[in-house]
Amino acid sequence: MTQITGRNGKPYEVDEKEVKRLEYICGLVRRDILQTLYRVGRGHSGPSLSLVELLVTLYFRELRLDPTDPKWPDRDRFILSKGHGAVGLYSVLAERGLIPREELDTFESLGTRLQGSVDSIWLPWVELTTGSLGQGLSVSLGIAMGAKRQGKDIRSYCIMGDGETQEGNVWEAAMCAAKFKQDNLLAIVDWNGLQGGERHEVMPSMEPYADKWEAFGWHVIEIPGHDVATLLTAFHEARQVKDKPTIIVAHTVKGKGVSYMENETKWHLGNVTKPLYEQAMSEINARLEALSEYADG
Amino acid sequence: MEWKKASLREALGKTLLELGGKVPNMLVVNADLAGSTQVTYFVKEYPERTVEVGIAEQNMIGVATGLAMMDYIPFVVTFARFASKRASDQVSLCVDYCRTNVPIIGAYAGIFTGAQGATQQMICDTAAMRSMPNMTVIDTADVHEIRGVLHYAVEHKGPLYIRVGRDEWPVVFDESYSFELGKGVWLREGSDVALMSSGVLLPYAIEAAEILQEEGVDAGVINMPTIKPIDVDLINDVARNVGAIVTLENHNVQGGFGSAVAEALVNNYPVPVEFIGLQNVYAESAPNDDLAEKYQLTAPWVAAAAKRVLERKNKYWTRRT
Image (tube, rainbow over all chains, first blue to last red; front, side, top):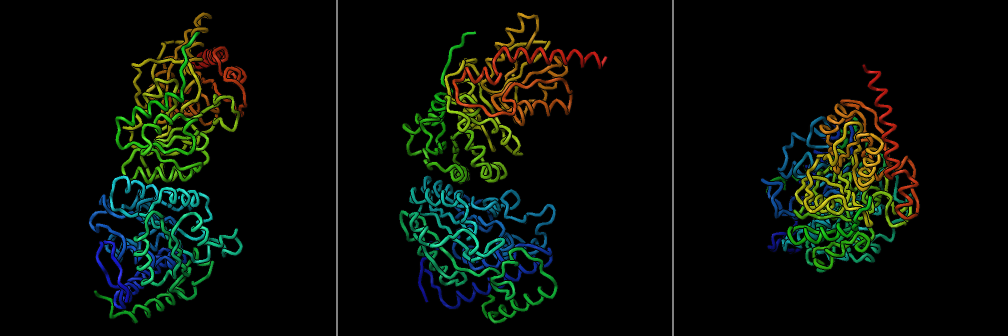
């Protein structure tokens, strides 16, 4: 059991019950993701599944938000810079009660609020339209600067894909955030080791990765990204850091939770057939069953 | 004609300083070009309201977007090249698509940039910016227009791009100048041909009208700072009542102001047009007067274009009747 401070400033215990409860929610989110992609017939399954624990811990425990008002001025700001993780985010918003779960069925259909990449024009719960990679961190930085200027206790969060950080814009933002000592900014990298077309190894090397961020003046926390207790502790740690931005390098598994998708590049953007859907759902349902005593609470 | 001249970039710097005193939530985002763009006036008076991001324009646009989302008015001031090209995707998505209130100043727009040559000139920015669906695009002709447009900019809602020149340039207007978005203005009436200018070539249009008058041609002069949304009503009026147009712009003739006028015309009353501007070529290092002459932007070239278009107009009307 670990005691941390919650985003509301109150002490908070990360015990087994809390962990299992969040894991159960992650199972629900994975179910939503698979159902949505199966109904639609396509979509970014791998990049959404690797995000689940990151998004669930953020939306259920970390982000300060008003469930009745997406534009509450004092809310924390979150940008999903890897906009192709859209189904992951929409599923979390649904489980959090911010959008109706039935709306997931409209994903990528004409007139939907649930665009293929997260979109602030269509859905008020999205802060910034993303999908052209590498742009989110700069905007999160601008938001963090604005909040500080206003003397507000608003934190600015940004999740990037690992491949996304090959974009030069990311390192421009990294340099700038350190210069401005932006300690209300938290970046999270979904380090799943795979990108759109290939594994990292065939790309220009990003290693030594954590060292790079440290050299750019960031506080770096490197953790396993599907471990909810560790994630909650990392968010807590980031909030204690002064005069530096923090980045969490979260080691994740692309396609996490569906055995045949895990660590498979082809499931970056794949078509879920009926037998594959049934297999995925039986795996996810087994997980939910094992955690069923934590379904409420 | 003898013109009094005044520095365009100094007008930019001084107006931003002036606005700083009036608009508390206004910021300037700078990418190591304070001296070149003369935002130094603002930086010195309001260092705490200057966001210096270094030579990193993609980040500049993102940071400005975030600041705008927190209800600031972040003036992005950089060269037209960097605003429209280096950071084009960031402008397209974060500002234009997301309809963010970020005023972007494209300084050193066009070819009159202190003899620094093609790399510091920008003749494709209007084309890039006006192809973005939500973007408002304005060019400026002199120091008074710069001031008027910038005062408008703090009131504007939505994506906004403003072209500003660099050098000492003829002063066409006076303190009474007031800017109205989307409106072209007749500076001189004329019934044979209309010289429609957006930006710093305006004095050449005025001089050309004088030359033409001496040759018995009644040429009107219209100043049209707003390139998008273009003043369709005025263009229609000119097409119907004058029937021949010369457009002037400190930009490539493909995709810029002249193209915007032509698009409006062909949708309504197609009449002959001649285009003054860079004829699909890059310019080079040289003093401004030499460049204006070589690239055929000066009054005699405008007058010659007017006579060509007038000839086409006469043939056109003959065919129609």
